[in-house]
Image (tube, rainbow, N blue to C red; front, side, top):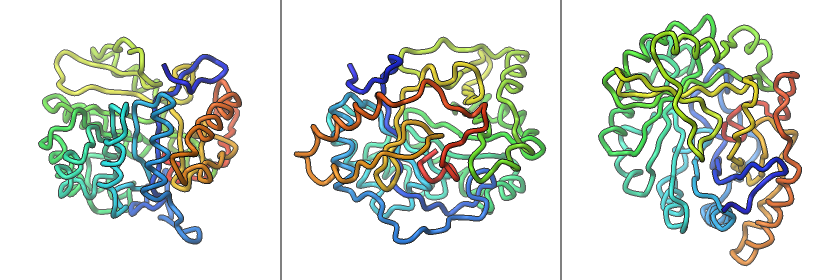
Length: 326
């Protein structure tokens, strides 16, 4: 049983760990002006990552997702996977990527211990893909998705942010894609961040509208598993793939929260939309600091709010999703 629990009975067994803020894409809803360095990188070292994951594992963490920025930009990305895979009691290692290196490295990462991968594909129209991401890499990313399927990953998911008046017409294409392909589609409702209020107002598409359409077309809501997070998952007897909806503006969205976030510079974030982060890096210098680090985590969790305040327009200090790993 996890030692990491808040005042509302929620247990946290899932760590989303950013390893870099850097991204080579310029997605309009995240980094519209591209990555802008803020002084020296100073991202967690491999040893610091090892101490961090070891402490979380001892405190009950069973799943680690490597995020960014674009995590595969790190030259030691395969080594990061191996460090996590060598950590006892971690039984699931996942990664979220824009997919641009996936074609060449899918097998290498699988062999290192990566088992689940989410690839961001916001449109199946190459022109719209370019408009949203700022990169003309659609074919390259799609070859990467195929390489991941061939490498034998337990689960390959496609992340897409459907945007009103941009790529919202892509839904039929996505559905056609997964009819005979065993992919999990994950539609993520656009969230307002500190940099994107005007963009949010222009392009926010409620996830409930997608859900209503799926139900009308014969999709069924799957029973929620004991360790499931806030996604609502749907299946259809005529489709090999499945669909998940992330709807942060839905009532009770936060009830099933099971994840904690650590930024690439070693700060703990209790929520994607948080006022600030708690420094952990001073306790990531040796294995002997592990008890103190776990105690700090447990104390901080007692401050976690019951829910985010997105409905009130409060986005915390998060200027863009790349800053703490989305």
